[in-house]
Image (cartoon, rainbow, N blue to C red; front, side):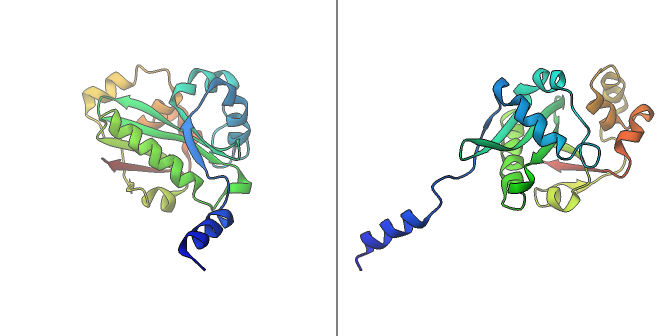
Length: 180
């Protein structure tokens, strides 16, 4: 068999559709909420639709066959610091690298924004360790930055700062950071 014929047969046997990671659109928000709801109350905090619409510009989605099968967000916390938030993959697509593709894209985005560190609060420590995250204790900012960040109304910032009123949301989570 000629090599051209083998290449054609191999291409025909390959999956027609691959996962594509792209910026989220407002039309994706209901599906993003469905993905988050699969894990709400256990691994992720529940998110209201209004909160997701307000943050849609931070989200990226993974599409497979025209369907959104995963999501994740990058939130800028400070001049040099971002946070990977709300990574969720449809349970039917878990274990196929979708989450890894999303986190890789979020880390690329952090580099494009010239962030030097990325934080995550997670139960999935081995997953994030594969992306260069290591466990930390405390809040890795100066006291001046800490005071300034306390002015934020964002619950995720409060979780980063480890403020007492969000402790019930963070119990059992591990604080991790990656340097870029």
